[in-house]
Amino acid sequence: MSSPKLRRNVIVGLVILLLAGLTARYFLRPPVQLPGLTYGNGRLEATEADIATKVAGRLAEVQAREGDNLAANQIAAKLDAEDLAAQLNAAEAAVMQARDGVDGAISQQKLAKVSLDRTRELIKKGFISGDRLDRDISALQTANATLAAARNKVSEAQSRADVLRVNVKDTSLRAPIAGRVLYRLAEPGEVLAAGGKVFTLLDLSDVYMSIYLPTEEAGKVALNSPAKIVLDALPDTPIPAKVVFVAPRSQFTPKEVETRNEREKLMFRIKVKVDLDWLKQHADMAKPGMPGIAYVQTAPDAVWPATLPSR
Image 1: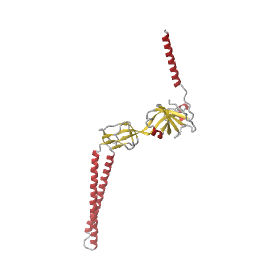
Image 2: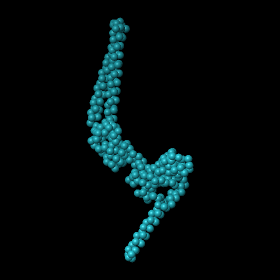
Image 3: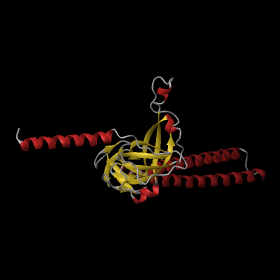
């Protein structure tokens, strides 16, 4: 074997040994010791909300795209409202007509009352018989019934108009929360049934990470405990957070839990929410789906280290 070839083989061998040593050191290193703290792996998540139709119709406009930020109550899409608007106009005209009917019925009622009062006076003076009184009483009763029916007709017409007015308003699809468009699920021209989804939003004011801890560690975690999240993509930027949920029951339960070893396998979900003030200033940094580690303080006097491992 020539000397250059031997040297090359020796160098390759040394490189392989060095890489193997570094790999072993990385994977076989002892676990990080953080007194008064515990940690778990997870991914950032955010609460989702849908923008969906309340009435059936054809989608006329879609005003937002995936990735857009929407304010709460902002119009994101519109349904074709032409037919509903025509129905509303007809319903409002029916209301006016019904009110005219009430006015006419009130006039007839007043005339019937006047006629009845006059008849009673004439009977007292002996100018007419009692048969006329019966007819006037019957006429007033009829006028009262007609007025009641006219008022019911107004109420029915008004109810229909109110429903149509709400339906017309509901053709404008508004964001139920402030958030970012995650999915655009429908396009202009599509005919949607009531409840048809047009967008899915991410509530960027509610970003969190769920981690799972064994019984011994979960038992030390209290609500509102301080926490920090270290993302793989932002290892030098610990994100302030706090514990907002501790599962009352284990999420992963072995079939048999009689022995101590089996009980130690029970895992409890811990929800760690990112600080809202931090999110307002760094909304584009903490993206849902990013993996990382959530560190939780389990002892009140625990001291946070200057740096936290990201892996």
